[in-house]
Length: 277
Image: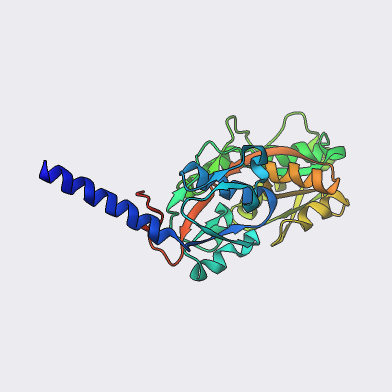
């Protein structure tokens, strides 16, 4: 009985210490609507906070109903979150930015069954064109699916029925000599498009790839007609962008997910959060 009492007391002390140490813990999160909501839902999934259900995927820190550990949040542009790791205890980072920053594996990942599928988008008026179909077939190819095996879970293909790179309904002869302009962010988006570029080149179609480093201009440029497509964001972000900005961008291909993760900053493990991985 004495040993049992000592064990229970020790467990209580450990939990108490974890709760106390969490006070003042700073976590950097992306500051755009869907990615911030996604980050908060990740923390909620592990029991660290409680988010208002009505806020959905566009939740912000104002929608946190319960924060028992007294966590503090630092809102940062998604692309810049890796840069603030030395200044915070943890950071929640999109998979593509974690890859670009060559970070070690995250301490926590969101569920692999993520609805945040990264998509290729075009203007609605262009969705049924041969250019759109040819581009979609290329990025949904078996070559692209195989490429994602290199990421060991940090980026995962969602393509269930890969193509051979081509769409039998497309008149490739009519597209020969044409240029398709696509805006994208870095790894893995730009690398996927490089594979697509090689595929389209077999039909004498040029894929012109322009790399950007923000989450706004890829959509505004495509919507204005100065580029044909973009590949940089997940579907919920694009849907929210349309709603907020009156654009008419649609998905022509859902390619992959990049599980968002909680990465170590000043804290090397999850002890400060009272969690065991």
